[in-house]
Length: 167
Length: 228
Picture 1 (cartoon, rainbow over the protein chains, first blue to last red):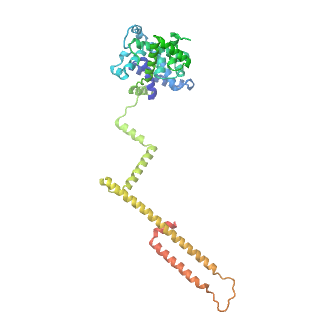
Picture 2: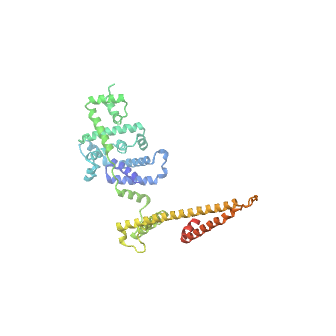
Picture 3: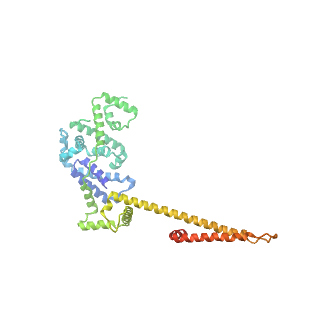
């Protein structure tokens, strides 16, 4: 239970960049899993992969619900700011805990489009295989690889724009 | 074939993850080495991927697990202190725990008995290391002495039994040897002196029987154990 909670919470936190929202979405994930457990079929992949898929679907739903708040993101992209709107909700001690570069990477992640963001999170932060990511996202493996590649390049450019130099 | 910047960008992740073939990787590196735009991009992406893969998992807040359990399984009942104590004690009343507790108590009893602690009049001084060592040493010597005495008693009984068996065999053998054979012709003056041996054998058997009786009178327990 704790292992699944940790994994789901990490995916949510990396996607939304906010602890409170990540907690709320994580609870929704487990509630959805609890209610729809009968629909889980082992032929569709492992239980962990299924849970990640439910998590991803709820994150996209959350993103679309709160899309209005992100209309200002296009303005933020043109300005060299260190923190995005979502990460401004992070407390200073959280920033210290995460580490400066990690915090900046997290901040840059929330600026990616959701399709690229979820691909990069699943590959580089959750270290899933391409086949698992394909099952979670429900797209062909070629699309998965393309999204990961574009996501990484876009993330590197955002960090460069933020004045973060690679180590 | 010289790669273009678009091609470099399209296959950047494959290069970072080592999925290019050797010729492709060398062509890739050849372009990057000489391109002022691709070189920093490739370095940034490599560093970024390395950084993200070394980032630690964020710990979920402890209340999240309980909140999830409350929402899925329902809120936990509020119990008073004494109810919690009663639940704990009820949890101990399982066969597994009872067997374990009984084993532990038996072990403690054996250890305390061996250490010489008196259960009727326990004293705190019994727990002193010197007292414990003396008691354990005394118990060990007593146990060894008892076992040695038992083994030597058994040896004595075995020797007596084997001696008795030998004498019985000899007694049985001698009457057969001296059984009336076919009457031989007696020569004048010749006497049959075999009858002289019977009283001597009988005397020896009687003497042995008396000795065994004396021993039995002195060591009643020994004989009880051996003849059971």
